[in-house]
Length: 148
Image (cartoon, rainbow, N blue to C red; front, side, top):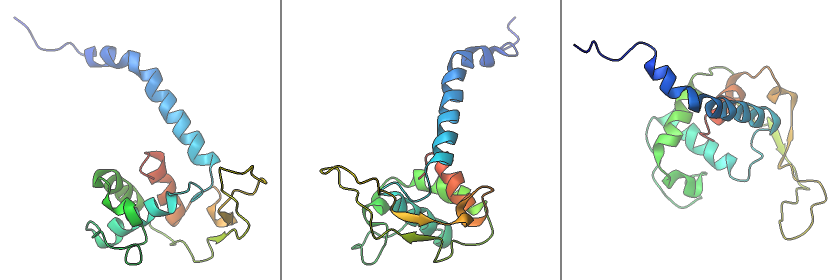
């Protein structure tokens, strides 16, 4: 008579995958800490979708970019953004102030010419530094899962 699965058998089955999962977590945390917020070329659009879902609790209606700041990101599969919105919601506190980051007027992000070393889109402020609070914490939580 079979008494069902043995205790611990699922953990033995997952053991070969554990190093891969731990590596993924380590690389995700390192990326999250090393890259300043909003520096990926499309991160502001991803944040706009997450913020929209977290604020209005509904999917965005795809309209011309003037009506919705996320542009084409608003038409991508929503589960990715729903996870980000749920995590963003876990970080109550101060919202990103208008002066959170100042746009860098000297940014040169052209891939066709050599960079002069001035690729940051924003001038980052101490409010974005560790320990994270408010919207900064929400962005880091969403980013940690790959939702941004």
